Image (cartoon, rainbow, N blue to C red):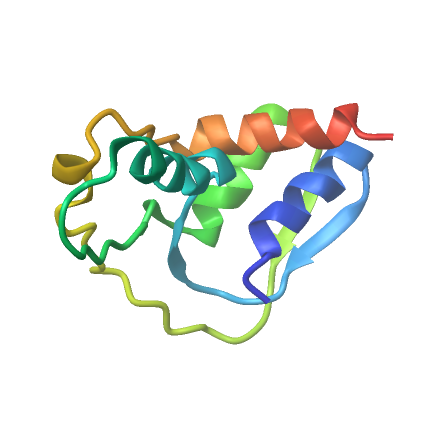
Length: 122
């Protein structure tokens, strides 16, 4: 169910209709921002055992729909379904201190880049 924002981007890029099948607020993380800490940890080898979270930017599905429509104004994207109880106050811990310089892609940039990727796909 939580693939909704990505599937909304794909539908917008293709001119299709899509309904995000849940209501809620969640932390969204752009794929490059997921890969970067792993790559940084492999290159920097931080000492000790660390546990980090990647909460991303906490946004509502209304924010997602607005960001999609900023890129594709006539996107046929909506929201309907149950409220999903996502944890909203998940901190990163010491992630950025242990691995400085990590990217943090904004919702708007992530949505734009995702739609561009789907538009470029065959």
